[in-house]
Image (tube, rainbow, N blue to C red; front, side, top):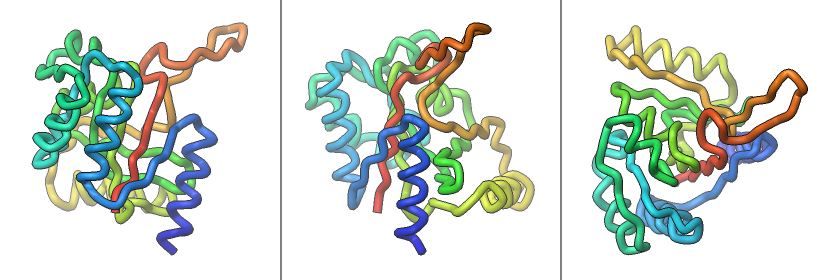
Length: 183
């Protein structure tokens, strides 16, 4: 069942323009984040506060890759980062979307303002569809009393079009989205 969810999520997310990568653990994920930053020539990277205990490991690897870290919650400095690294609460196989559930503004900005976004997602947090994702989101907010002022479904890189139906990628958010499946 888990393999089927992963295959469905990966296929749908890829159709939407996301790049889905797979690793076995957080150490490998941190190496991959550093590699993505280095290969992109990212002058600056912002790490979401939602990375919690993994933040130091990822920060160390990113610095060793030659990238500066932006340590700010203000929108302007966060937006100046080339790469933002955050955590997805869920991945939805039906749509290829990820759910960001954040208690503060900084984690949301880190995942949605830079040119490229890297979202870490545990394989165990893949769900089949939006119905299940909705139930889990409701339980987080209502059942636990947790206030999550920022809950956002993200489906691939930012895209918009004008009245002439000219599609543009990356105008209102990341133009490139990576999802790293962990576990």
